[in-house]
Image (cartoon, rainbow, N blue to C red; front, side):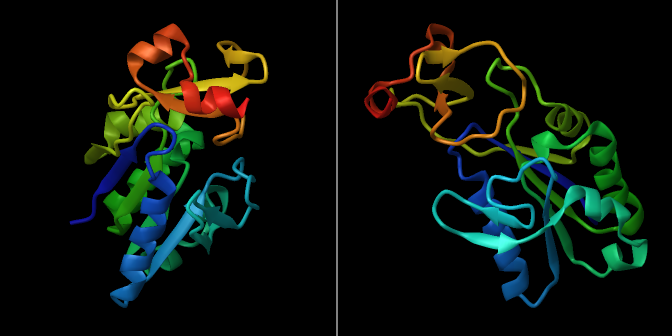
Length: 193
């Protein structure tokens, strides 16, 4: 039976690497997997999913997936969505339709919350409807589990601004809740600034 999966984690929890490994594992087993991401994520190009450790693979956009004929979607053994936090609630509902009506598993990877600790729309919808929800863990600079994302710039921690601002280690750091509240980036990030 097909299921809708949501694997979430803070920045640096290897979400994209896991999405790419899942894609590889399906293909290595002789199965067809389709990799996609929301159009808004153009950091590495519209048609590429790229992880910080150097893994990458071609993909389509989530917007293209929604336009594919049902028979083409049914030809895949799995749909894998990276950066799903940027998906609209309606797109997440469509992903659940792929699972429920086309019987194709959908595996989603993304952030749960933004730099203000507010849920992203795509993540909020997945938390409400996914069959399986699992956290991918990473650590704060202090050694505790990191659950929050601090945004920063040359002036320090950023607490206000648009929910979506593309960036990676140059703009965000994963921290524990305590250091999120205190706005402490940690010594490694402080040295880079």
